[in-house]
Length: 78
Image: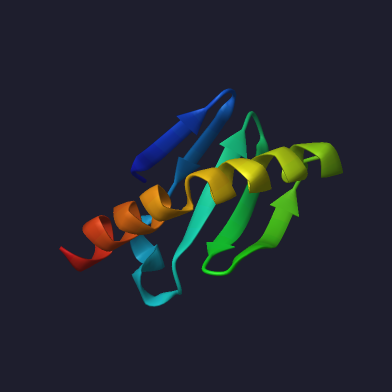
């Protein structure tokens, strides 16, 4: 599970078995987890995050979208 970004209390990462899915990112904080598709950006699921946290995470994903897509390509296509 490579961590590709940390922002505040949030860790953004992939699972090695995610190769066969469209590009996405998992996000965790404490015992909470969410999954966002990267292109276009949209929430797939959230477990335990409040709505204001999801909005904050979505803004981080948008800000770093290209970096996250590049990390996906590097990890799964190299």
